[in-house]
Every structure is written in C-alpha cells, then in structure tokens.
Amino acid sequence: MKKGLLIFGIGVVGLLAVMMIVGWEDGGMIARAKAVVRANLRDPDSAQFQDIIVFRHGNKHTACGSVNSKNGFGGYVGYKPFIYREPSYGLIIAGKDFNDLDIEQACQQARLEGAAADTAMSGTKENAAKGSSCFGPEDCNPGYVSFGTAGK
Image (cartoon, rainbow, N blue to C red):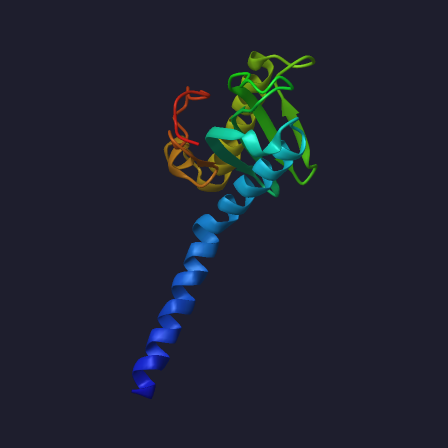
C-alpha cells in the first residue's frame, strides 16, 4: 500500500513538472496579460477576450489578442487588438494612438523574432515552426496574425 502511494506521488509530481514546463508558463502569461488589459479598461468586468497567442524570444514574452469591453455609455465597442510584453510589462490597445494594423504588425514581428530564435537553436525553419515560440489557435502558421472568432 505504501509503495503504491509512493509511486502515485512520484507520478503526480512528474506530471505537474511536465505541465509547468510545457503549458503553465504560457497560461500564467495569458492571465497576467488579461489582468493588465482589464486594469486599463473603463469597465474591467465587461472584458471579453479572444485569440490570445503567446510568443517567446529568450526571456521576452509577448501576448497578442483582442479585447471587447463596454464604454462609458454601457455599450460594447467591438474587439480591439492588444499586445502585452514582459519583462517590460508594456501594453498597447488599439485606439487613439495606435490602430489595428500597428498592433498586428508588432505581433507579427514578435512571432518572427520567436521563430528566428527557435531556428538558431534548432538549425532548421521546419523545427522552428513546430517549436515552442508560438502557442495559440494556429501554432506558428507563418502568415497568421488574426484577431478573429475564437471564444472568450
């Protein structure tokens, strides 16, 4: 019985370690990006998110996605792209100073930087496209930077 519990415990610890390495880091990045975006909205509780993708380049992480929220009159304004970066903790939401295309281009640049870093480490573009720099709906599809129709 004790041996079975020991094996079970080791298995759980191993599974948790793998989950932390593979996905929890990006889940945490997405959660932090959502929190920072919400903190900059007029009505944070109304925030609806879609298509959030995380790109990595060394110790730099970038989250790109779209947010819809209510304005001062209580109506939703429509999805606006955003980009959030760590470790600088910078946030840009499309609006007065930056348009949708500016944000999409910045996200495309972040994707390319992540893919270039993976290419340098792996030696091939094919491995970079399958590597760990992109996580999201299209997993490093070379032409993909869309803020379309996923769920909240």
